[in-house]
Image (tube, rainbow, N blue to C red):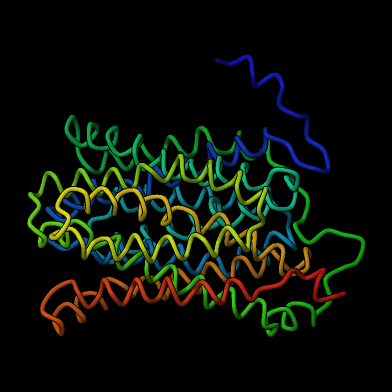
Length: 400
């Protein structure tokens, strides 16, 4: 029903819902049309490029990760809107370039350009803006924002697949590019345009290096890296692992899809709990829940479908939450003026290291003769993150 929207607060110092909704819609479109649709587009692309399209996807993911390094600093210098707008235009232009590419080099260049633009216009800037301007209920606001990426993965790819069926993968990518260009620049206007490090005192040249060297930041980065490895290790192997435990392909895919779909309600509930209990307690509980959900994969053969749905429930909920409560914990642990830059650095580190998880899974599976070793290792990584998170203290507490 549209009427409750009339009760949303006007934008003020303690936050507003209109910018949250604009950022969420932008993320849904940009990530839905690019990142979330890659799995649908790659078979068609591979057919025209000698059966090899994985390099384009890798270029997209690496560029998206590297964009996180530049976004925080750029928003502090130029303001939020210019960075978002440039990111939107790059994501659309890159996809258009890839759509018309005839050589693999041009395809990879277009995908890298689009990945950089997606990184500059979605998660990192969105979290930075919401954390700064939506203090009162930032957990719920982040849930709405991050939930847009979950919705994007469910809603947009079927349209892309339909476009490929009626036309070609090239036309589907051009349609995606057009949708981004037509809708997202208008959404940028609804986002606060001030510099993210604007405050009563300018950011000193030594403030960022000093913040990076603090124990708080290092513990958060290490803990979030462990969690990202644990999540990625299961994310790309869950279906195969469930099939190895005796499930049919259709049942394994259903279980995997159900676990991912749980991310949306998990974000909403997790946001409210993080607002009430605090980010540190929430993220510590998430790490423990992720370890238990990962280990549930090993109990599938013994518990049959009960083990499957235990994995779906525990892992599906826990895997969605670190990006939400982890960002809140970082905001609590560092000074506000350096938060956007540290958020970008943290995101880049955990994304780049987390991208190694599928390769490590293959190596551990070969060494152990199955998924027992990698699943146990990823559960242990999630468990090891819990004491690191619990040892983080707020910047106010350290100052006192």
